[in-house]
Image (tube, rainbow, N blue to C red; front, side, top):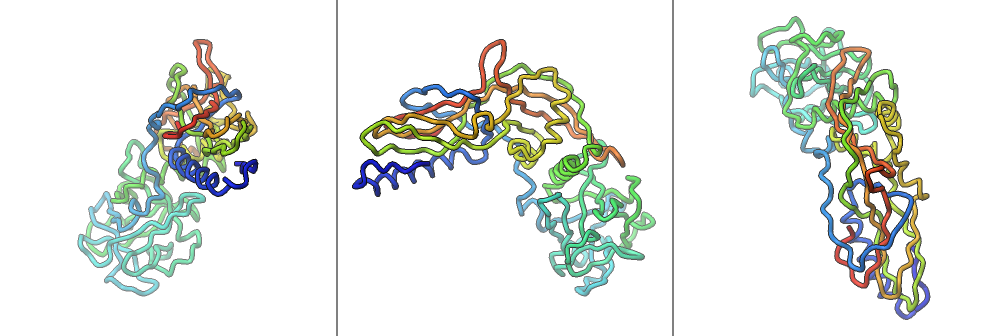
Length: 375
């Protein structure tokens, strides 16, 4: 935002008002999908409040969703534990009946690829690949200590736990049905001894986000099949800029930077939706786009150079909102198409420039002598 310098004696008051407006705008805009279009139109003097669109569930970055969790064998019903409660490097990772010795774990997630270290909450050490069984070792971040979830086909609660070093699976050696049974790793076959449940509520989201990151890196690991396309419909209007107060005695043309966005959303996870909106998942976007029956998709905030000019009258507030016209496309993602494929249903919001039946995606210039709500 540009600072109005036409009346120096009022500069301090103007700064306070602008700061207040910016804070209010930021509070409304954070976390909302912003998808404006190429033209701006005057808004009513007092902007109407609009509810934020319902978004996906909370993302897996939440610490509470991955801390102090248990991991249980779906085969013998026993939980991952450190043998004899040892605190030293090299102790075997086993399964024991609850309460066991050290059965509480935390998942230290790497946001770059959604792999995680499995850290014991008592010893502070990480599960590491070793022979003849898995062991705990000081956490050093190497691939042998990185794991990721993959849902067993058809389930959202039972998982394979795969190692990032070679994509092998954590398993219960010999499918042992007794306490102190060793765990190891072997080629994935999704048998009973490789199936695990966990109290980590973020597990499925972690699996989806890891699959999406892998797809973004190598599109041969995923595919998209469209099921249906809904007609174009407007989304709730949302805030697209900060709020600026013109404290001068004349109208000022102010350039408002708008939130950068592609306008796309996903219903699967907040992380995937945020990546799509930010343009950080072009490979997934291309996968969906290639199946669409329509071509009038909106090209994001870059279509207006990420900025809108608004003529703000003297002693008035100015800001930019957006009204998005979008089509909801439902379909199925298939991840890990090279190994043991698994599917996830999704609804993808695809913004469109306009529609023959009426409506368009537009930025809206707003000015008002009072400010109560951004959108």
